[in-house]
Length: 251
Image 1 (cartoon, helix red, strand yellow):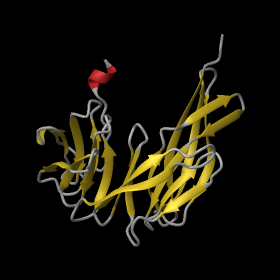
Image 2: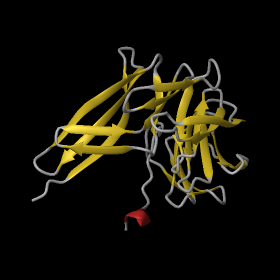
Image 3: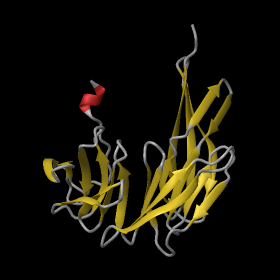
Image 4: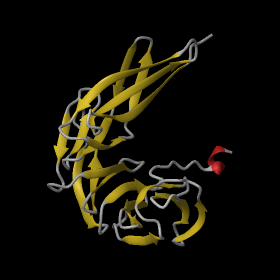
């Protein structure tokens, strides 16, 4: 019977003794159907400040054959010093840029077709770059596309819609803003008595958005109408993270 191999790459962060994340890890989960699974840390990517956010480029290519594991691809890291790193996972080479001095990068997102990279900082600013693939072994190149004063307070999360037409940003100013990626004009602002909005996730058809906030509630919004369709209550503390799985997509 043929042995079935599969490989997943997981991007994570670790914490220092002070409780702040300082290293970005790439772990490869090489699973063999028979007899067991093994988990090991393949590489450590050291940066100079606590790591706030990590995103993997869709250009991941992996091959796992017996004891030999080959991987290529890129990883984006944002840290509290305000630096955005572009890492080559194979060689640990990296490029760095600081979009704004003295402002912590809170979240990074890359769209599904790998043409745009977005980042938000603790001053409420959203930066967007156009991505072009590097030639041969050159790391992807970032070309500034726009800078938006998206929020009045901390920006906390940015997410592209699956169809790549929208970008959502969340903030401590109690709002979620949705931007059109064609020209980065404002599509809509989602407001409720929700305090800090920590996270968000689009549905697979990009028609709905779920948000997580400090008022102990997750909300399902219609993107087109800008209206709340459902509230999910019952948490005793702030809802700070979420993931959205469409039932229709699993049917």
